[in-house]
Image 1: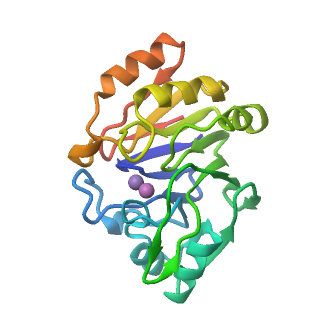
Image 2 (image 1 turned 135 degrees about the vertical axis):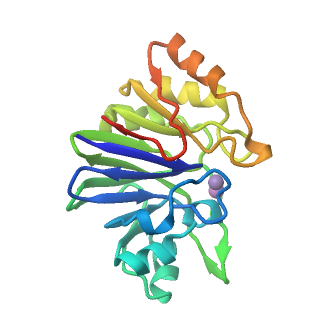
Length: 226
Ligand code: NI
Ligand code: MN
């Protein structure tokens, strides 16, 4: 069984009862986050890219919990210099962690730099954990290789950005679900945090229902078991 807690924005906690993996833990400065930083306690943290709304509280959380940060090599190098324990990866690579496997995927999105260090590329992750296979897309536009993510990795849960402006909007996210095809459950993310990514999540829910899949819209701080 896999417990998924939605912090807000693109921040989640995956919990299989033994390990906790935080995804893009943006809590401080996140207007919708209700969970307290000290309650997150991750064993691992996956950071999709170096933008502030994704790296978020990674440094503080990793320091406080002795967490290992899984991220692209360039961002890992930056975190190493801050004294953070990392497991660096790159796009296309897969590794067996104590909680399960994680395969790093591409994401069509910029990554920028922090304090003069390149953040490399933006990524996503396909995470096998608690009997589930979750594709956390990170920040991305639609890309046709998502078809191969479906064919090769066969995820059964998708976490997709739907807010538009910086990432896919509703229609492209629906197309992504169709391209991947193997997942019946879709959890939308990266919307309604800032005015520019405000979107009608009910519309997304209905469009996903129209293609025979299910969108689960999580409340801030809500946990579901899958
Ligand atoms: Ni971004
Ligand atoms: Mn973002």
